[in-house]
Length: 434
Image (cartoon, rainbow, N blue to C red):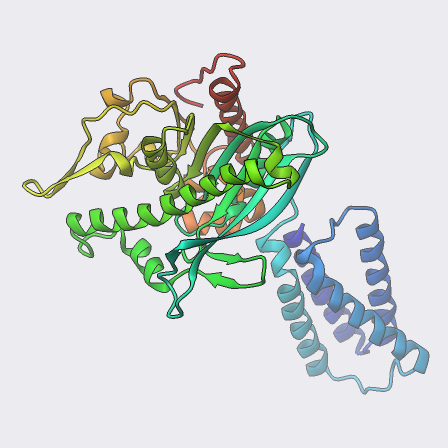
């Protein structure tokens, strides 16, 4: 939509400039009426839901309002042809307007209006945000001595009765807690309480309840950026980084889960009263998936784990004598579903960081594993829907699979897996390849 509008605007500016030059007149009266008409059309299209009002249309609305207002004032004052015609003024004015159109339509181009993935459950979904303060940990990313804050957002069945399994989600390396909103909505609509965490300073950006903002830590971002580059870190240093990252992630998740379990007994907030603390699942994308697998190994009260496109960091052993990684010899007993894109699937045999993920690993013989052929790493998040351009840049190209098919099919698999493991309904099976 944004690209189409920009193309129309550019064609109009060029065509009108050519018309003025050919006729050697400013035609300001015509332009003023057209600006007023375009503003009115924008209002009508917004009210008719052709344009769903959001941040992407704010700059365009401001520009159209200013142009319509100045045009109306000019018509009222009848100063439509007061300026002498000059070709240079026409050309310069057209160029400036084309730049302005490009600027105000950029949000709609980068973040195009899109249809949300389907939600198939019977429950209406509500949300709530909380900030939990871990008084047993000091924040390591700030100079000020303060406790660690963890921001969490809940998606849960609205106006529902009874209790539901708790699902805890951890985002990717530099992601945000809202990265998989379509998945949370689908799960909550089927009777789950989903809580997604922001890991402050690992998250790209997060805001606490009191308005405190935290951006991604520059040191951590540098570590992530250089993690897969040859010659930057030794394998031993890579292993050390993994341990550090996983400790922060799993500490955050453990703290939130323990806090929620405690609140189900002591807090009358309806959200906590809808949670069944005896049924807990964890899932995550990328580094969040790795943390979820790790937590599934550590905690006895985790009943199911979904790993979305992540290595089994918890199952890696660094061998100093070979300066390489090997898979742990301990069996992984928590029910597990692995969902992979091409980006990870193609590394299972070639990258030693994924040695434990190999489908023939006997320690994971009970795990379910599936691969979406043509999918890329971010295909399992909402980013390709929210901003295809940004997703393609971050993941190094466009996925060769329909973006709605990937996210909706993955959501269906995750729902069916948790239904089987946490609710005992159905018998989960999946194809090896989609």
